[in-house]
Image (tube, rainbow, N blue to C red):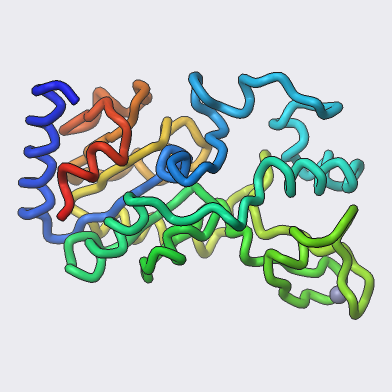
Length: 247
Ligand SMILES: [Zn+2]
């Protein structure tokens, strides 16, 4: 890490110490160190790799593809998305400790991997869903992620035979209104918002950020559309930055 970036990390430490209500808003970059796939990144993104499937990942993760090609959808979901063996990493653990210390009040995440919760964070808003919440389309029963992970083909409810749908937001779907409202409330309440490991190109970003007036810090290894609006931009890997700001 170069000296300018180190200085910026020190500045962020100072901002965290001064903040009354700091919120962390994270994306795929937070989970890549856990071995999970980053969808949109130019360098490592799943979309920029050749695929062995009949459609692009972006098409496969639409409600239409899910309805029309459930076998292929679930094969892709299990093989490329669901990774229950992936452990939380240093950033997840740091954020959980920061919450216990009162330094961070809430984590809003675009990741559906449940790793913040597994690391111990309590106030987590999964705006794009959570792979641990799986619901039968027939009777509404809830199932653990293993019910989807450990079966061949399309996972079905043992009671009514309905398809068990993973609790993730598919492309083109509107985020759950309750979760979106909760995220907006937390952001509007905060005086320091740290957006980390996200390109801020997801469709929910404008709704969450456009009316935010507090201090904004962006940590990402690529530029984002909000860099000019930010009080501090740190172009570095999120785990390197967290190693310098916590503990
Ligand atoms: Zn059922």
